[in-house]
Image (cartoon, rainbow, N blue to C red; front, side, top):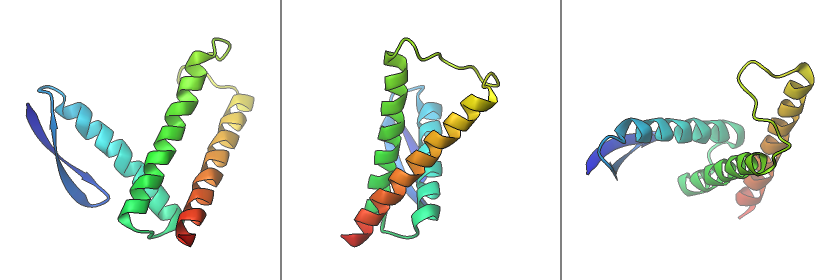
Length: 112
């Protein structure tokens, strides 16, 4: 079993993983760290625990949306560079909606 050290939000974590999975763990940690920074920039300092909970919820929402698309055979899987202007607009609206959800969650957490 391999050990990797990852950084998320400036903190180091030692993670055990299967041999050969080190690069995958680093890539996943990079993605999580990027999302944490996006939320932190959007809502400010709200505490490490709440920030990680909000990030987890955002990533879970992204995963749920991706699973919905995969489960709906009418939804085409789009290759990079093949979106029309209307599809780009729709995607931008989805991202905006997701950002509004994150801000609403942040508002609720800030009240607690």
